[in-house]
Length: 255
Image 1 (cartoon, rainbow, N blue to C red):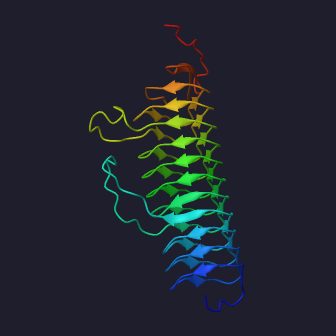
Image 2 (cartoon, rainbow, N blue to C red):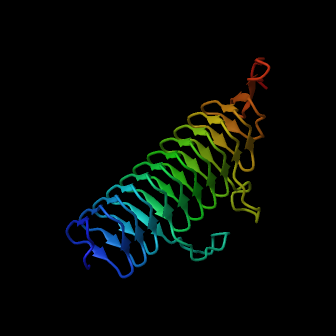
Image 3 (cartoon, rainbow, N blue to C red):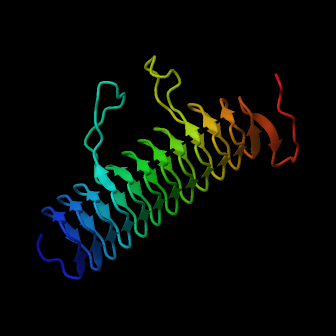
């Protein structure tokens, strides 16, 4: 393992060639750090965690126990997008990664991101500064999540989705990107949620829909069409019940 000044290592730690450490790093028991990984200053890595090759942890990062960071995706005949070898996972300074989290290679987390226990973030995804990915939330590949967003427990964020800054997504929200459910070669495209929008618990967003700036989607709503800026929608299918700018409310159609 070699000598690493000002670092504290637990028992049965495996460190491969080419790994670099900053000062004041603390590593728990049974940790594996693969070749070429870069560990910044004041980093803590919990027991039984795997840091895959070339992963970069910036300064002041804390990793919980049993996390897997920087793994490569698999390719099968059913996967539409060609999966090539991904570049390194980069976790920004001050970020916190929960116990049992899995974050793939090719993804970049900004500064002070919080990823909850058992959450999963797939490859080629960007997560902005100060965003929270809740416990057991799933963020699929090729997705962009902006700054200062909150994605709560159990939410499913589909692949090929765009979430702008300051968005709130409640627990168990579901999103989709495949209009024909794999029955035709339809291009995959997830929802686009614009800045400041809020999505209530258990809402469902269908492929390609756009939720406008500062819009609100009520709990349990099924969004099948675009939601205008500053508009509140509810129901299944979701229909407007209020516009924040004109202050007018309307009853949801019973048809």
